[in-house]
Length: 322
Image 1: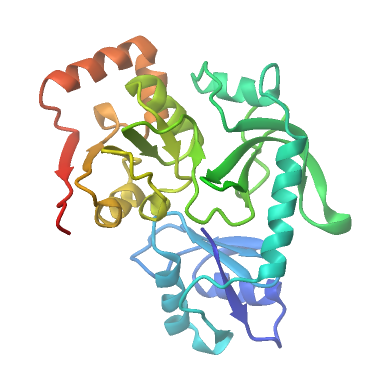
Image 2: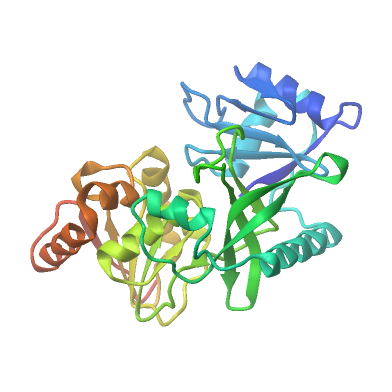
């Protein structure tokens, strides 16, 4: 999730963002840039800085909490900042407007069958279409006169109250993620504690990072899976009280490892069993596993891990007294 950062009013957002990105060893293009994150020892650019509606938006793809990023930026360049909030600011009018746009976009979506989005999933070895996904051939990108319309895979971010936000994965004509965009995945409206619910939770539930890896884990493990849309969002999801076995399926990268301990602490409770299963063969994510091993091999591996110790699987019982 990206948090707004209020910038000195004497600077335009674009100029402030470009200046900050350059100071952090990055490159600015148009309305966004990538640079080294000041909240961790970053040797290659992992911090995204974008111009939002009224503020700059930050996201560290290495998994740093956004508030930690904001504090580090404040220490690094205090003169550039007018104020940094300690929590997530709420602008009711803007939130309502974005939520309305998300609802409208979702209502304009169509089933995936026969679309670029279905081809995109099949190109990644995924041959099922779970709930919570739609396709829109003319998805708005940008605002006002500069807006363009492009095909996108839509994913509904929901909680028990209904639709909260829509994640858009913009696609090119070859059913690939759009390579001309610095980030082809864009969130519309605030996801809050929601997730992409690819199956209904039972007494067990798995959480994976993104859409493709979550569907892959659903195929391989045969349990309900939700997509958090970011390893850093694992600790913030609302998990139903009915879930007795929670399976964390993080990506096997620094962001996944960083988010894991926070997720265990945040999601423990009610005597719930929390397990962590890393992608087999030390691969990066569950879509890598699916594409390498295939559906049938995956099921065999899953059955074997149920019957014997698996070095990639960790078990934690939540303390019912905590």
